[in-house]
Amino acid sequence: MVRAVPSVGYLRMSTDKQETSPEQQRAEIEKYAASKGYSILRWYADLGISGDRTEKRLQFQQMLADAADGRFKAILCWDQDRFGRFDSLESGYWIHPLRKQGVQLVTCTDGPVDWNSFAGRMLYGMKQEGKHQYLVDLSNNVTRRMQQMAQEGKWVCGALPIGYVLDEQGKIVLGKPEDVAFVQMLFTEYVAGKTTRQLTAMAKERGFISSKGKPWSVPGLTALLKKQMYVGTFTYGVRQFSKYQPKTQPGQFRPRGEWVEIPNNHPPIVSQEIFDQVQALLQQRRRHTAPNGKGPGFALSGLLRCNHCGASMHGDSYNQCRNYTCATYKTRPGTCQRYAVKESQVLALLLDQLQGNLFSPATLKRVRTELVRQVQRPSVDTVDTSQRMLASVERKLEAAERRLLEVSKDMLPRVEQQIRQLEQQRQALLSQVAAEPTAPKHNATDVQGRVDAALAWFKNLQRIAKIGYDPRKVNRLLVQFIEAVELHLERKQIGKKPNRCRTEITGGSIRFHFWRDANIAPPLLATPHSNDSQGFQLTIRWGS
Image (spheres, rainbow, N blue to C red):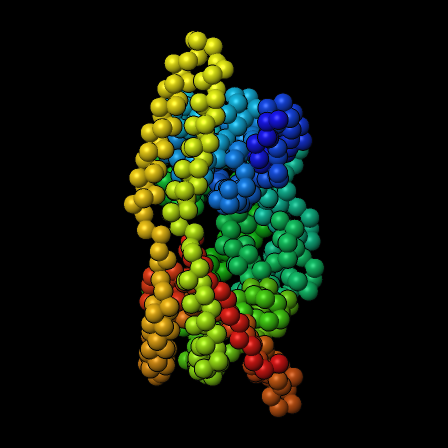
């Protein structure tokens, strides 16, 4: 009895209007698998995502990650374009790891794809380029049509800004009176002295939501105040969003000469005078931050979390003091309270916890013991990969030799050529396995050295985290082995006034990561994103 090939099924469609719905794709794949001897272990699906937006196809990425476990040997799709519409260069990036694991792509329309022969790769590449070119042509046609609509003063795509709607002829007209009044109130109150944060809180209290159906945030309301549309000017093409336009990148700002600007295109909601006043105030009140991370930075950026809402705590400076404030409070007033702590307070507390807990004799003994155990355990490295590939080639070679006795005379040359190719691969893998070392990368002595180096690293951190320290340097050191710091925060009233409060830290936790294949300073500690690193996590908690 022939054993079924362990496989997975992959479904994808770009929109909910396609004829090849997930149900239809799945039915075709199941029918094909039953007739061709494939056993589907699990399904992956990316729905409503274009075939060239691989960074958003999370299930596709998960499928490729799972392929490294060796549990399946084939990926079944309805058609090649369901697997992806990337060009031949990008397709090689995704295909190479699959081929190394011996995983084959099989489509219901064309059968198995041969990535191991010259002819198979050429055929696959030509089809892939054709499917990618379809997206390029479609993008150009859509862009041309959108440009034509914009030049006619018609709304092109997306949700209209609040206060406007489209009439039966597709023209932009005023929307609900209450929405129009809401927009006018925002502009008037901002000129009168209200801040964007206060306006966001007012919008939430009065039950107003954005045109996308979400509660207003400070960034969203600030963007509303900058829209020229509210003075009757229609603007299109400020930024480039198509990835197929030459010499541009998605999100890149275009030169103003390439914009479409049509004054008096639709009824205004605010006067040009009020609009200009608001723009001047926005520019005057903006916080000046250095671009591209060139400012002074903050020592705990990306590490602190608010325990009440789980949001990050953002660094800011006011009253000549460096602080961290809950991001939810800053962007969505009323969702979380104003929890703000000083950097000097948190950093001193963090160093105390490192000194008292992480580098205590008991914890160091645990770290040393665990890392010694892991480095003495055989690692999954290139040797294991080569041996798996060798076993796969030998199985294929045995199957081809058996097939040689069964095929007709006209197929003999083809099978003999396949056997010669497999034999060449087998000899190359044998040489590779013989040449590769099998000893573990590290030993117990390495671990002792790494722990000692980490202690020296910590003393250096204590030294630089004093008056006049470089916050960016401290941050680079901390993020190498700390994943997150969650602070337990409470607001305590100051005096008799209910609005005067200070934030106290009543407890918290620090989550560390230790990785045995670290290659950066400090020698014991490394980023947790290395694919071949193995290690363990350690969490220290204190207080309530």
